[in-house]
Image 1: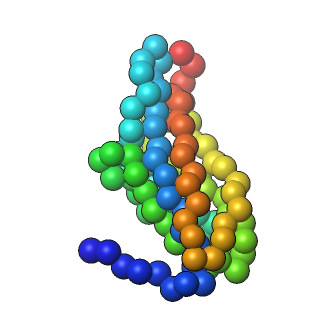
Image 2: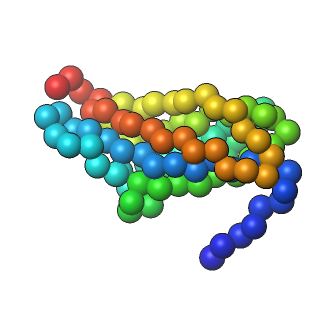
Image 3: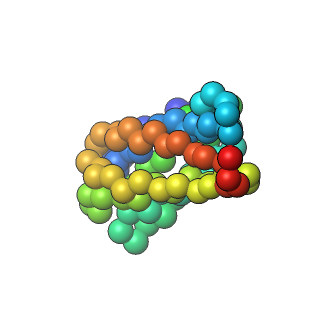
Length: 99
């Protein structure tokens, strides 16, 4: 299903990958994504290809995107968001134990 968000909302979309110890980077499925902008927080998860999309009211103009998955160290990134557009935020997770 495709839903068109209101023009006043801002999108955040991207891919989450992980690099295991001594391995090659690969997309991660099932990563919990939280996007926080102003007083809003929305959560979603990545699909089998590591992709996600979240929408916030664009009035906050900035957001922080958090990614977490068991066995991997969580990460976050602060970004600027713009009403009516989607900002790409790709994230890289590392194992939560030393390599």
